[in-house]
Length: 210
Image 1 (tube, helix red, strand yellow):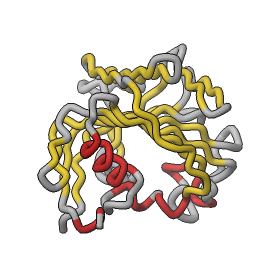
Image 2 (spheres, rainbow, N blue to C red; image 1 turned 60 degrees about the vertical axis):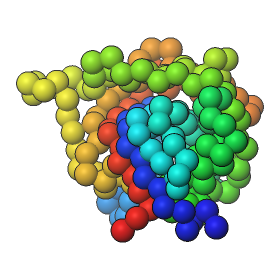
Image 3 (cartoon, rainbow, N blue to C red; image 1 turned 30 degrees about the vertical axis):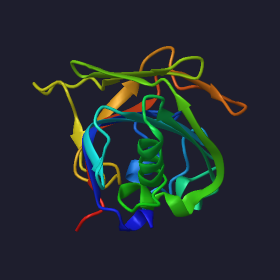
Image 4 (tube, rainbow, N blue to C red; image 1 turned 135 degrees about the vertical axis):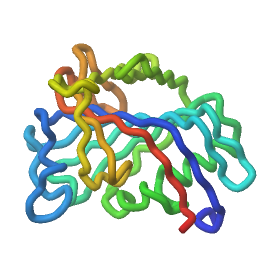
């Protein structure tokens, strides 16, 4: 079973949703993810870069994954539609491993989201670029996705604002950011433009081991 395989990975991630800065999900009063998105619905791509990773004896170094998520209301209400995109450089074993990790089937952080998914839009193997330039993160899937985020302006000497939000991707450290102009997604009959909207980025260090 996939969940019995020991795995770990480390790398980087960013996202850019359609909410105004700062996303209400992070400051929901009743319980996590219960606040209504500022636009009523949530359209959010999440992009991941694995610097080092292993699923059993399968190396995952250097591979990228993207998830495109639509929720019809507060995220905690569920009924998410999710499309997955896996780096075309992944071989069959790596593709299977990444699918298990990023659907939550293999445990780890993404397992928190699995019960909220109502419609699986499928998995595609595509070219995914991921770049870190200074504090800027950017990614592209040709003809599907173009995203870039920069940290929110701050007087802090580091040039970044970090929050301890409890976000499953990184519960302890999440940077507050904003999407650049031209941030778009188009696939599965969905077309999003999240230019100038809420963003986040963080290092990731995941495992299904205690």
